[in-house]
Length: 346
Image 1 (spheres, rainbow, N blue to C red):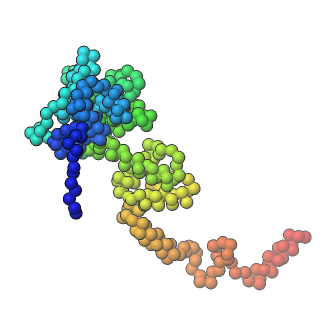
Image 2 (spheres, one colour):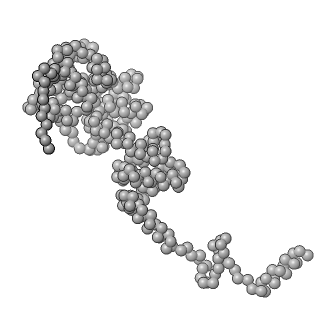
Image 3 (cartoon, rainbow, N blue to C red):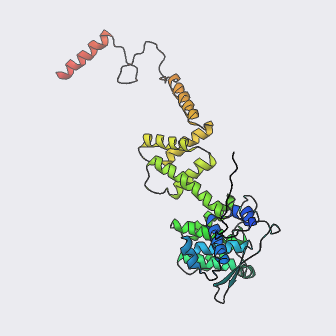
């Protein structure tokens, strides 16, 4: 392939970006976080020394919460230093010098079973509550829930942070995700968090990717069944099993939904699940495998001829109206029946 030359206008107004940011930090960061960092860098280098969270959000077409999450994200990795006033509001932002000697981005362990929820001691709560990021997280959650936080709310957030090792960004996204589904109960939020923890979800980006996959799978089944709504929780559990446990392709799940509609004339998740369970037990992974199973079933059905328990005489006859053996009457029998009919009419 031909080399491509990059030409630079010496009069071009430019923003200098550290190479280490591009090589290391940008790779794993959320795109919205990158936009905030680059915009701040641009403001700093053109001597625009006064900005607000609102002005940044307006310029980037983001929400103020998006901007705040980005700022705390970069502060966590020491790319920014944030100073707060007496009212815990951001008063200044400084760029940190980063180079190859900077600490690498921490990696979390692979999926493990989450620890059981336990009541935290007062000392532990006091220790955790001194975390500035967590303070802000609680403030945002209070806004999301649109009510003052109760003690059980705070206990759950501390559990997510201290036991499940959720970052502040992931905790905020967890609440944002659940509330977007009109689910505000503590039990539901905790259940989602435990599922994420079991799946090895330890960043906001991974949670978003997982939810995108689930949404795509829900859409596939909703389209196959002709649903004009989001599948309910039990229905979602079926869908997750079909795709994540059985590892079925889109076309196989769609085929099972189609057969269920033909058989029951309605979107029957239980019936579709029975079909897919059979295919899974039989080892079917493609439509060709399913067709082979269909052919085997037809052959078995043709080979099985039902026999009546009393069917021992080859001369037994059947009529087209039933499957019962017909009796052979003699002339004497007919004469007897005729006489009975005559006597009944007298």
